[in-house]
Length: 82
Image (cartoon, rainbow, N blue to C red; front, side, top):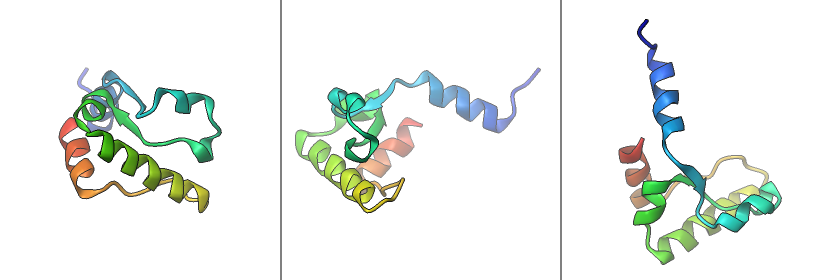
């Protein structure tokens, strides 16, 4: 039986190796964690981009927001990865 579009999307998403930019973030409280990205995106980011994305995510979390927007360059990489 063929999968629905949402099922295909979830299957593709789960096959990617998603994790935090900084592996030590798993042990931190949610409000202090950084960005959660697929492995191929994490590997292509420069150290500066990683720091900026984590800073952006933590700032939004500290304001009580669950989501933080990606910067343009990272958003492009995430779209291509998924």
